[in-house]
Image (cartoon, rainbow over all chains, first blue to last red; front, side):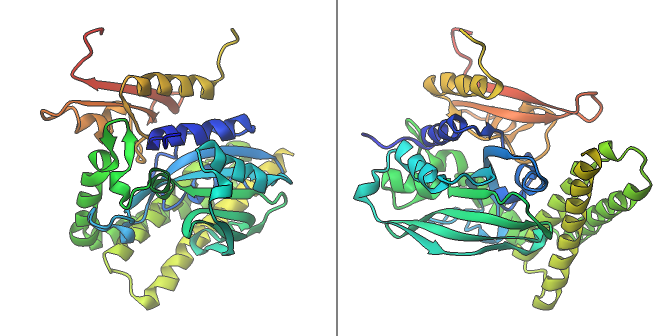
Amino acid sequence: MTAPTFQEMIFRLKHYWSDRGCIITEPYDMELGAGTMSPETFLRVLGPDPYRVAYVQPSRRPADGRYGENPNRLYKHQQLQVILKPSPADVLDQYLGSLEAIGIELRKHDIKFEEDNWEAPTLGAWGIGWQVMLDGLEITQFTYFQQCGGIDLDLVPAEITYGLERLASFLQNKDSLYDVEWTKGVLYKDVRFKDEQQSSVYNFELADVQMLWKLFDLHEAECRRLLDLHAKYEDKTRFPILPAYEQVLKCSNTFNLLDARGAISVTERVGVIGRVRKLAVGVAQLWNAQWESAA
Amino acid sequence: MSAPTFQEMIFRLKHYWSDRSCIITEPYDIELGAGTMSPETFLRVLGPDPYRVAYVQPSRRPARIIEEHVERRLRTAPMLESL
């Protein structure tokens, strides 16, 4: 069997999880550092309602940019994020089945689960987990989510995060992800090389540091303002929690840009992470309060 | 034939255009008012290179009552004869 193209591989994974009861959504249309930050994960893992969702999320990590010159690293890579809440008993078999669905013959390869507990300090989130190694290459992060926004989760969800470029490189046996076939006759570099190159120039050299600090302060203030309005807002069921969370996402991305620009000292770092975390925790508490008042 | 679900309909449309040589991309991860504003349209329609792409774009229009709807964007350059 010939290896699937990049887009064919994504089709198959989405179909696979769709067949297992997942809602398939488009990525969140804001700059995120990881699939976990999407409201489809961050907010939906809270509360007592079961939820199953799968989506691709372009994940922007300005400090990881390499001007398109590193064969294995990207500023913006794509993750497939799967949330199964609560985690089903056969979650591991379901995951392994997804690898077979894209053409990986498991008995011919070495699959290892290496303990790798996961933590996102800006989100007040952590979980117990493993990285999945396929012939020595990390292709997935597998986590049992324990806490989000500083809140203990009632229904422990399984979070499965695939690194799509790495997976496609493996399937197509390419040394560089830029040589991955996106669709027939079109390579990854034809679609994404310029993005990587130009974004690196901006993120490392040209982004205006003072403007970024100003943006960070503005987004933080807007989120704070909304959180403070909640107490006096009459109809709590329609209070704009999601728009408040979007301000957290803006803060987080601005923080990542400042970091790539070398504008955050080691001593400042902890404080800035704490500022974002405080907002994320505030949003999570309101979200929880909202379903409690509705129940 | 029963009507496809929302996500099944999107699968089918993406497959259809994929089979017709379109690159399928994920939406642009910034708030846009329409699919046209994505760099995959705005920049790629410029210049002499042929390009075929299809993507879903969540399109935000704050002034509308329905704040967010999903718009499907198809772009083929040059325009197909059949169109």
